[in-house]
Length: 245
Image (tube, rainbow, N blue to C red):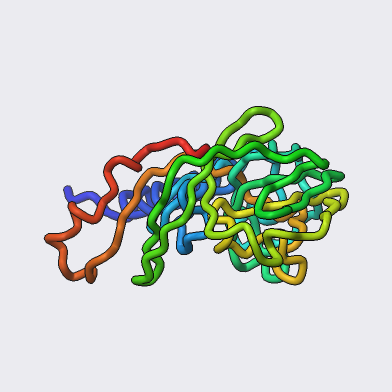
């Protein structure tokens, strides 16, 4: 006797539904993938890097949920990032846009840039010259200075500098308001960040999506997609599964 196939179909639908719910759950409370579309975080992150962001790092806000529904305000199980963390956050003027920067200032901190040097609470962050770094931005080659910068707690990361002059290299003293953080790009002279108060400005803690953890894929797309024979040469194999500092 032939068996009806309806039960198998319903089982398949249930399996797909459960898998979808699990994926949504993981994306909401654990990890979410992001890709890097701009060069503001060079040399730490390159255009074409794909990374995972830990959603649980600083607790959960409406922006932890798919489509950011306004179900609640503030953060649940919230905690402050550390200075030096690389984070994804929602662009304050337009939360539909994701930004990724390094946190350099916490609530109450005094932040200033003088002659290209970053100061936190009146203390200059040490930086050590590491040589030159060539950036290819839309076909324009620029040779920048590479430095290793040290946070107040001793954490180190690399930054790029084109110049130590100009208004964004000689700023006012920014006093980070309560419930906000101050974010800067590692490519210091090519980054729209918290120094621009009429743009990114101070980032509300509620806008934090999570901490960038590691790169799981990276591609240097110099060739058209249809040139599939170039794909193995476009993958940056050395960057795969590297931890983000």
